[in-house]
Length: 394
Image 1 (cartoon, rainbow, N blue to C red):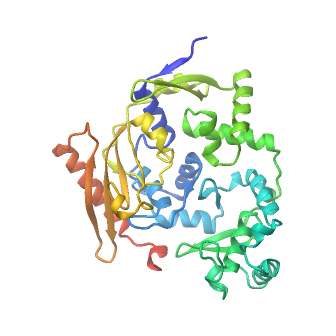
Image 2 (spheres, helix red, strand yellow):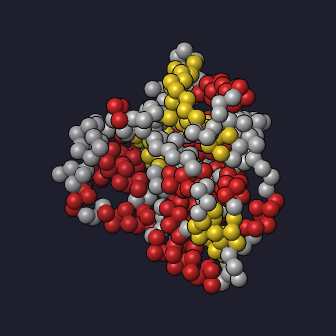
Image 3 (cartoon, rainbow, N blue to C red):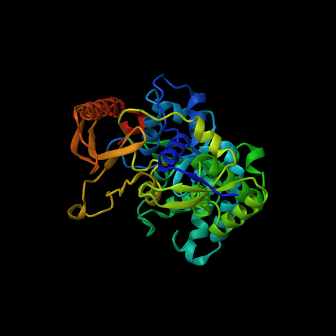
């Protein structure tokens, strides 16, 4: 049978729908609604940069104007409905995903026996690890600041105890119980993660199947590479093999996605993709800002193919070489990116500084658009200057 060819407009609409960007709720969210939003996204990335707003809060606020920071903290710290671990970076994930991370934990534990890896902790690595375990067992949850060897290590400037804490966390022995001023507080995973999830051992094949299905569910359409990269939990070869089997069993279909330049690219999708696209209404939301770490633009090449939006975060670019600015945020209007803005929040003064706004080459900043952007700036300012506990400690 001939492959379905999806127009660029329909591909954008489906992609934004799967990323919860095809609308924006205004009512104050409940804990269960925030949890549903995180589950729908798959994870929210954590990042320490707070020039405007931390990534995890900004990702949720972009999708729901009624989001409040404390909701996410309660879900993680109190309800234990979320856990913190690595995808491509540190992220908060639904707790029910935890069993599939045991493959990553096992690989991390193997690295703990590698002399070169242990050297990152220091000459007395085994003693440092034993001391960290002993203190947490005796005193309960601790952070790196509770140890007296800060800055003595050579790995990212971490001290030996901080490096040991990170190793044990990535190996699944410790869990992040909460963040204090964005600093991790660790405790034994057995006290944080429910036993039935912590001891579950899905096979590698089960995890590959889960990771590919869940990634495709959230992307709408994807290549094997995009499936593998979504959680960064499986290898590309595993995703390719999964795709071959799923296609043969007719669990998925292959379609053609039309790029913004008119070219077409093969992708995988669920068999119901055509009906789903037909049921989608156009997205007509006014201008809003996205975090540079938003999952919708995490894959920069895909954003360029699909939306014609060439975006690079310039935080790590030397100032003289920056094209736009330190913390430039994309502006999404409806189903297209209309520009970007360099913003900085001054919390003590309860104001937001707009250092620059750059519309896309084919976008006219008429009065309507300017008003919409100004309204988005004002809304973001109200949210970002409503200081949270983690901001207050900085």
